[in-house]
Length: 158
Length: 196
Image 1 (spheres, helix red, strand yellow):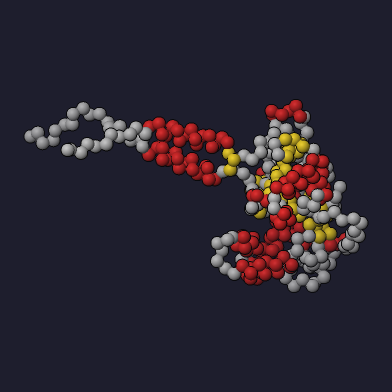
Image 2: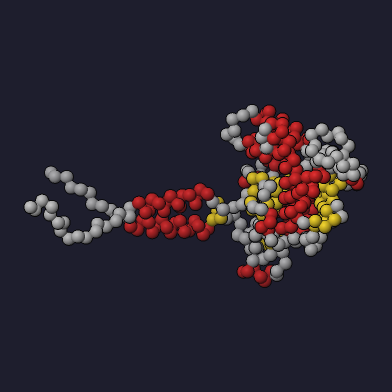
């Protein structure tokens, strides 16, 4: 009657973890595809407001970014007033014209009329500064602008 | 010769390496917001005569430094702005607009082509309130265009615009563009901002 012999040593076989790397790689590739590297190191707080009538900004290479907001915690020595940031550094309103000229010089000439300026402004900024920026943009004839916002109901702004 | 099974390679550390890469990407990248409200600034022109607009065709929206909203000289909550703007634009006071559904009040705007929304803000207004107001005004225009598009073509305006920008959309784009143009002419977006 020794047909059903007990296995010797009732140890559990080791669970194969060979598929774990595959799963993690899948996650990794998802993140690599879905995100972009940070273009500018932000020195300001940049908490964008919400809006729900948004249009998508396509053609990333035709967009110039102007950031504005209060200096973030590490840069408090620049004060607590709302500042403009262009290309990794704080800037003044009068620097915008030069910035736009530099950005335009990088692009092909026939694309210049299609350039859009995206204003990434912190939601607690004052409209005074935005008005100054807009006036400056009008002076250099960069008339297409986009107020970059997060998608959501406007009531969540407060 | 007897075949020997290939020894199993220990892949335990591969997961660790992949995790390291994953965490590196999580930290160094952002999911960029790439949507927003598109606007066009008016070009600077010297000594241009401002066009004469009848007072009843102007819908004044004022935002003061305390983020209070004054619409047509009356205090208003943000949530009521969209309805008020829609009513003003869709009024059709001179009865030339046969597609308007408004009250045809002779004291309000003549027709959507003449109606202008004028937005004024102060320097102390916060950006979030300004965006909220802009959003509501754009929404008023979009709502009217949606209703019109639904009546004419059985699709909403926003949907039609999305189709126009979609490369994979199979329909006739030239025709779609024409239809969109027609609606844009019927409800032109006339939103002007007061320079301060």
